Amino acid sequence: VETPLLVATNRLPFTLVREARGLERRPSTGGVVSSLDALLRHRGGAWLGWPGLMLRHGETIPHDLADTYRVESFGLSEAEIAHYYDGFCNRTLWPLFHDFVERARFAADDWCAYREVNERVALEAASRTNRDVPVFVNDYHLMLVPASLRARQSDRRVTFFLHIPFPPLDVLRLCPWHQELVKGLLGCDLVAFQTGRHVEHFLAAAETLAEVEVDRTARTVRSAGRVTRVGAFPIGADFERFDHWAREAPRRSWSSRVVIGVDRLDYTKGLCERLRAFERLLDEYPEHRGHTTLVQLAAPSRPHLPEYQDLKREFEAVVNSVNSRFGTPGWMPVHYQYELLPQPRLAEFFRAADVALVTPLSDGMNLVAKEYVASQVDERGVLVLSTTAGAAETMTEALTTDPRDIDATAEALHRALTMHEAERQARMRAMRDRERRNHLHAWAQRLLDGSLS
Ligand code: GDG
Image (cartoon, rainbow, N blue to C red; front, side, top):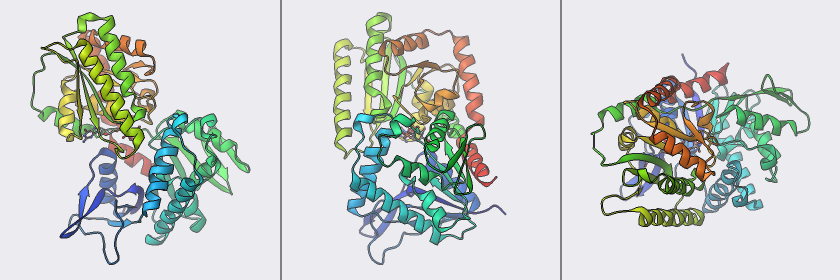
């Protein structure tokens, strides 16, 4: 019998909404959610997270007949949403860990709320499952949970995975509470990152702590008489589903060649730089004018935060300027869509696209690069990828570029658009073989096996 599991995340795999009939669940889509869900369905256990609203007295989370594991929730007050979630998570850790130092805000009340919420999540995790149930703590919202859980239950198995980059020491140090964050993770048996580079950064940060012994070769940290293992567990895409959706997709014919970009509208994704690179391509290589279209799909993200509203305005202004500079009655250079599309539609765009421009300024991994490859069932497209995305560490057949270097990205794009068929196919086939093996569910299983070994 496989051991059950407790998964702790900031959000539950659904959002509750209060309707006249009572509370209803709105399921979240997305790869990571579905893979953790599959894992829990298989093993049983519980999922602990925030349901998106505050339960009133007497309210409980509605059951779903399909539930094969328990759903446990924690609440967040208005002030905690402002200081823990919008504050420390999204205005401190998110920018800092992505090396957007000037955007990072360090406010003591945000930090206090973060500490309190993490403490509460640890308490819930400890009390709602038996202590022989391993706990999987997910992402930067909950970095203090492992140590807090360990303080209560020294024999609990705890694993943590960070989806975003772990920054180098000189960046991490800007946060007044960075040592507490590192100590929080040292409550784990296994701390897992996307890439070897992030592992190195974490070990370097652990070395600065007193009474901690770091073994860089073995990738272990000894503290308080216990050993924490540290490792790289690169996440994969849901390969078979994207491959399947792409094969099933209706074939639409485009009158021009298509370069695709798909992102949450976030400042880490390098959207304005990408557009400037496309503009530079049209400037430098006029043969692409009238024949190549950039399709940029942008999913709304954190739209209530002013910095995200500014980004949207700025990006749309660049789209308009490129379109008015180069557009003709028969050809619009940039198609921009601001909405959340169903995943099968994404696969359709990915299959049709001659080139995918995946040029984040900083990214833990970047699943879009992998979903593009999974959807390239005809093996004729080219991936242009940032050196600053975690995906670049393994997707070595992609054309790489420094996303801040507009000329270099325009050059890479030109090279992609003019590459011979045999080379395109060889590169794409090698990436497809790798990503087919390293799919999302294999990642979740590897992580679990790693935490139990
Ligand atoms: C974090 C890390 C890491 C995008 N538009 C639509 C849509 N998407 C989906 C994509 C993809 C996901 O959103 C974005 O994933 P990324 O990996 O690019 O980035 P983050 O959201 O920042 O995720 C990242 C990831 O965690 C996993 O570990 O790779 O580095 O930052 O799956 O397909 N999905 C739908 N409609 C859209 O319009 N349905």
